[in-house]
Image 1 (cartoon, rainbow, N blue to C red):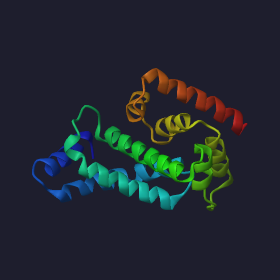
Image 2 (cartoon, rainbow, N blue to C red):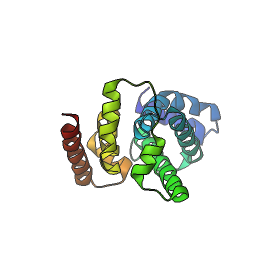
Image 3 (tube, one colour):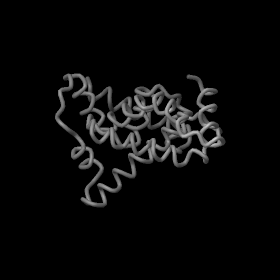
Image 4 (tube, rainbow, N blue to C red):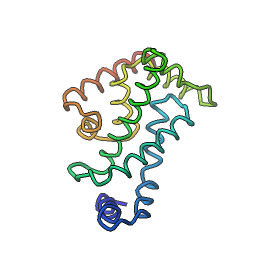
Length: 174
């Protein structure tokens, strides 16, 4: 399904009121969104599923605000990014903890390979912005400009996050 197909489904939902037309968009993007959350939450699949569901609900409710200035996937990942940070802020407010403590709280003991465990340990060492930039660019395959739009930061700032994150990851994983 291409971007033109995305627009076709979006128009069917927004202009024709066809609620079922949102299903192909969910099927297309649910795996990338869940993978994004799985990496952000350091493997907490239950939380990832909850956040993904919340993302798609918000996307459906806000679909009329999609202007097509960027791709639907960029718009959807921006919503996902906001959902995750709203979750972190809510948890931080409830527990009055730091983001590092939230990361540890979200961390779960799953049967991951040693390599994945090492990667999650290395990702925990990054600042939240660096982690998100790395995940968007390298795990989700977004271009730097797409990731900058998702994170609502200048392209140069995004590149700085990626560069710093790669340096820290390389140092930790050696």
